Amino acid sequence: MRSAALIRALGIARARCGFGQARDAESKGAHARILAKRGAKDLSAASVALGEERGWSSGTAQKRVLVSARRMSCVMAPPAALLKANDAMLNGDGAKRGSRGPLTVEELNPNVTEMEYAVRGKIVQRAEQHVAALDAGESRPFPDVVMCNIGNPQAVGQPPLTFIRQLFALCTCPDLLNNPSALEAFPDDVVARAKSFLDSCSGTGAYSTSKGIPAIRKKIAAFIQARDGTSCPEVDPELLFLTNGASEGVKTMLSLIIRDKSDGVLIPVPQYPLYSASLTLLGGAEVPYYLDEDAGWALAIPELERAVADAKERGVTPRAIAVINPGNPTGAVLAEDNMREVVRFCAEHELVLMADEVYQENVYVEHKPFVSFKKIVAEMSDVGKVQLASFHSTSKGVLGECGARGGFLELYNFHDAVVEQVYKMASVNLCSNIVGQIATSVLVERPVKGDASYELWQKEYDDVFNSLKRKAKKLVKALNTFEGVSCNEAEGALYCFPRLTLPQKALDAADEKDMKPDVFYCMELLDNTGVCVVPGSGFHQYPGTLHFRTTFLPPEDKIDAVIERMSTFHRDFMAKYSDE
Image (tube, rainbow, N blue to C red; front, side, top):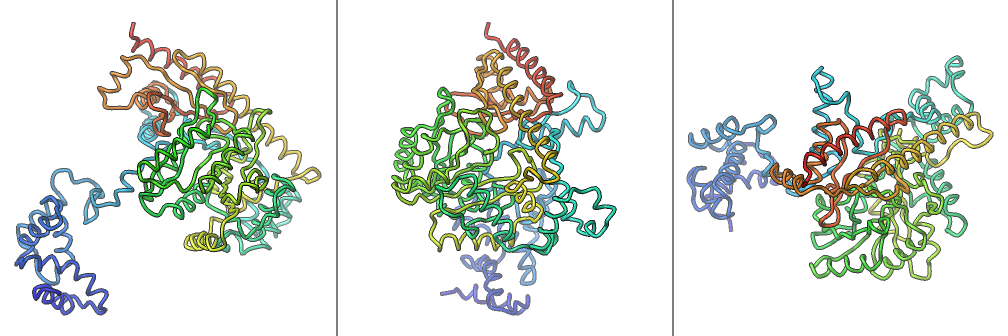
């Protein structure tokens, strides 16, 4: 039963504020209830009553009532005391740009404020400050900032492949196809591909179907079939979803899997922060499994069993496992036998297998060729139908088209009703961006021998790939000469993840600055050399160990200078904090 005071307040709200619909009146009624709390006659008394009832601090209760006072200004004017408090809240000590109004950091979704993403964290923000300072002519102990924090190849000098950029040009400016003189600059196969694309959709300025342009999904299906061979069933394009990079597909699947805080996902440690950040945002639980650094970042089944048992002891139900192959940040490539063990483990524990395979082209060792989890799952029908979601992207590999935000998600062995829910989520986003879909079409269907663009494509592709392979070996070799540093071979991907052993004095110095030791090291590296890397703690790491992640993406004519900066800094750092 509503109190007489509340009914009266609702009546005033309807009469004076003109809330035409009952739903709107009830919405404002939430604020009217504050007026009726325990017979409160003004908003000051209401804030006291509300704080006592909700267990809020006086400041929080006052802020909540102030919000209501603003919204109920048509009912009654807030008393002078609250107006004064309102002014203090908006203009007083600690007021910051963007802090005006009812939405404060304290009142945000706590999952957002607790979420962390180290790849774009505080060290990167400091790096951006250095860049701005250098641009403004300020002096720094380095000539430029080298962003080795993220796999963003073209940002540090990797050239785009000509074929894909020519295709972008014609597809985004189709009038060029009607200009004979302009067309002379484009090879015949690029022109044909652009016309085919434009015939299959309404161009780059229009939405596509929510799953992506059907013609491109058919190309993806053909790519997967060719990659995995005849041992796999025919790929259904209706089980393919074009996404804005692989990250969107990962977040879509996690959104479906996580129901509440008791649901967990096994994630590797170290891991790509997308997974931990997304689980925090969704309110799910991380179930960490540790990769064995001493065995080349091996994925051991006993460790997976330990992780599952530990989760269950905590009241967490493991529902999926994320496997990144080749690894980020480790650069390790899984052996096929190991992958079969993982699939069998998923079958035994009824886990969805999330296969992050965006680095499948970045394999630099011949004894471990890339094999997809789709192929393994299809071949292991004897263990049952393991549900698999696999992800690919145009951002990595050799294309390096991060800004295009192209990628795709493939579903395998899922019930039709689940696929419909993925489709619904894709529909809410309308579609992935069309330029990214074009990039994905090139990812899965490249120029072939006999095409006008083939020779240039192959030369540019080989140049980029071989350069990555050489730089990976060079950087690992150099890091292993640093005092107290050890680094496993970068078998794939775009990163090295060296382990640091720092002197006690360095650990103490980090503690004095209230910083984690690896963060302290990476910040000092940045401030002294301009080389921006990411602390291992941002990826999680085995307790008691320290690491950092660095890309090997700077151009070959600059990588030696980057290594020299790092080497000189490390030598001086170790000498400065030597325990001797």
